[in-house]
Each structure stands twice: as structure tokens, then as C-alpha cells.
Length: 105
Image 1 (cartoon, rainbow, N blue to C red):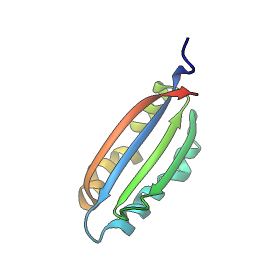
Image 2 (cartoon, rainbow, N blue to C red):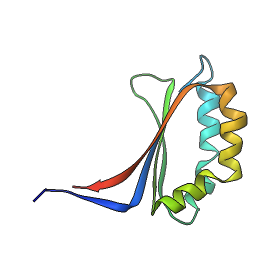
Image 3 (cartoon, rainbow, N blue to C red):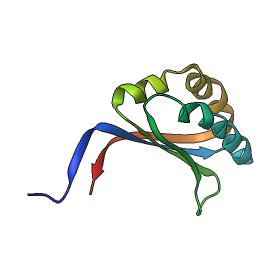
């Protein structure tokens, strides 16, 4: 028997962004503007914005939602769509988004 179980309901998203040269502060401000409304969304458990201690151009969201449906609804919101299509091209050099099922240890 293993020492862990996988919670197939809750999802954790790690969204990492690398700001274009000289655009880090603008990127952080743009991403920070998404936090208050997202934290009020039904199904949002955690939504935090982080800046790397090793590379100041790297920024990451760690997000946790009650299930995949709540996460998908979040991703379909106008503010998120607007960010990815309009804001991100100006501020982000590269990005990587990955969604996980939570493992409870």
C-alpha cells in the first residue's frame, strides 16, 4: 500500500511566465490585477502570485480549484481571455502552464 493518495477532484495549476526584458513590473501589475476577482470565484481555493528568487523575470501563479470544471470556468472568463490575447504578447517572452491533480501526502 502506498503512502499517498491522489485527489481526483481538486486541481492545481502552475502557470509560469518569463517577462520580456524590462517588462517584469508591468507583468506583475497585470497579473496582480487578476487576483482579487479570481479569489472570489466559486470553486477557487487558492490563487497566489509569486516572483522567482533566482530570476526576477520569472513569475508564477499557483492556483487551486475544487475541480476541473471550476478551473475551466476560470480559464474561460473574459479577464483571463483578455490577458492571454492582449496583454501577454506585449509583456511575456515565454510561458508554461501545467495542471495537476493534487496528491495528498
